[in-house]
Length: 111
Length: 115
Image (cartoon, rainbow over the protein chains, first blue to last red):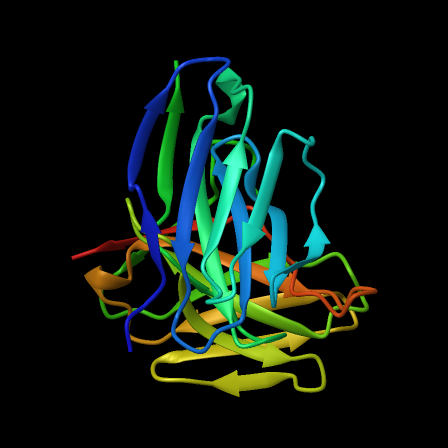
């Protein structure tokens, strides 16, 4: 079974731009969660989608948003990028409320 | 497993020795706990998990111990190998109002295995 895939793997943007990251979960997994990883803050939960509905949301500003499609693939969007948004963005999938399996991440650099 | 920014706690062990990585968790209502391993440039990799109604679980070369009284979790790696060198994270799952799937991660511990 293929693992979680994320595209793109690397991205460089400038302040004020917006970005969309994509995640394809493990086949059959309906829950997709997104996390931000930085050296200063560690791994922090952004949001979770299940059956196209946002089920949980972390403590991030409204510039961070996401969605899930009927095939469980998910995208997250960050608008009006700030330097502090530079991070590794990780997507994890699970069957429902069970162990999450992570993708390789998208490394976003904001200049 | 607490850390401050880049200054992750580091555990350095000799190849072949056993390693013990510790983690303190915060929510007494958390219902399961997971250990992840993260190698440089990769996403976290699932190692082992344990439900809150258990106090010990064993996998291949790994054992997780849960002490709910003091909210402490540990990961024991037997016969540590160079390939075990990575950052290890504990994560706790707290049941939410929407039965969601949010994990709260510890700061991580860097394991270095000396050949």
